[in-house]
Image (tube, rainbow, N blue to C red; front, side, top):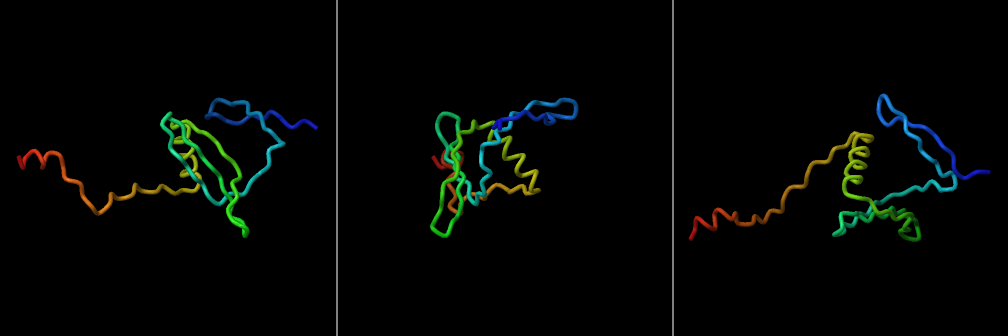
Length: 103
């Protein structure tokens, strides 16, 4: 039995793209997403499942920044959730202009 097959999916309204599906990959249930920022423009992502015995890492992937942004847009759109940017901490840093004005 072949472990790969080709399917076609829409790239946009007018175009279809070929996707090679790997049927031997397992489908995983994950509860947590951990993203680490690297200095080379890639992000290291871990998908983790909570088990009674503890947390279990299920998968690791490296994703370029632009691809990750596109993926996040798709996820937000799919669940209709668009989080707002977190507010800055309550400790305000002095503005550089105000320092110059003091001198």
